[in-house]
Image (spheres, rainbow, N blue to C red):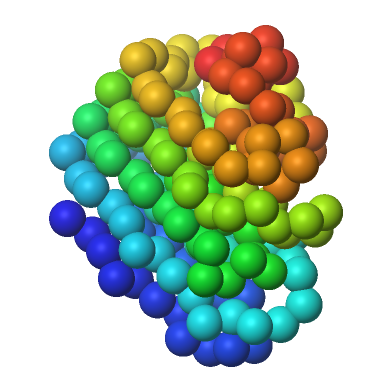
Length: 178
């Protein structure tokens, strides 16, 4: 259980995550993240609206790499509610590299309950750093629940990248290979 992670700075948009991972760009590695409950990732930010995703449930940070690196993300429950800092953007799951490691997501619940935010700040269930790629060939996403109940299509999105997607179907159609 991971909860109560907070950036208390009223002027800080420094990213915080319940679980943050990174990888080396060489060698063979498997990172397994499973059976976690992540919630109460919060910030004291009171500044201007920001598109920067500051609140993150699970974040894979790293550039490059190869398909010999694998992230296995199974059976996690991530609940984000950024309603206390509506001027920040948030996501339940985000990947920062789409050209290197494989991502294997299964049986996760990614729920972002953030209230309506307006035009700049947004909230997501899942985010990729690419508008069209979630990971290299071999990446999978099966039996996951992506839930965003508030302000869908305006500030709330199931999937995000350079473009934002309102439904799982539009996210899956835009992303390869996921």
